[in-house]
Length: 166
Image (tube, rainbow, N blue to C red; front, side, top):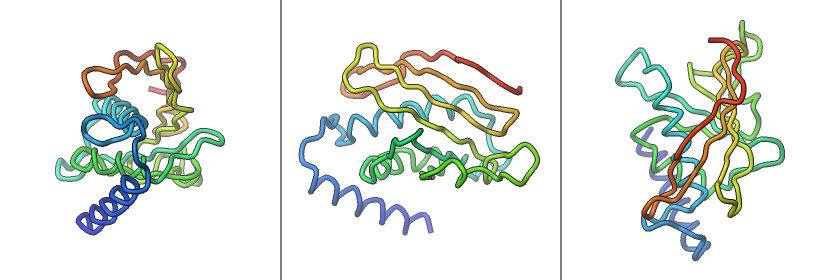
């Protein structure tokens, strides 16, 4: 299953590269937007408890906030880059990731939901607001400061805006 998904992602990536031309990609070919998502997801993953089964990748749902849609080529770049780190699932709406009829409305498959605000254009510093949601009793809003280091975009700091639960 994973190899079939990886093959599909590779086809989407190659199609996006052929159609997209120059889009501010880094040296590794991933777009600036994909690098910002990857950097943010890696920081969030580092702060999550490990899955009970070490052979199972953690599940991360990613959804844009409001009218923000994450383009398919960016989704493909992120999925390929994080293939060994997490099971990345993009959703069009929060409801796709949350089990509303269970107590405390947890994220499906014991995952975490990242509701990502608009990616900054060229503001300095680049601030990205993300809601990190595990359940209605365990969520926080974090502002990530993102900067360019060498040829990659990375998270340089983060600040929790508000937190609920434990």
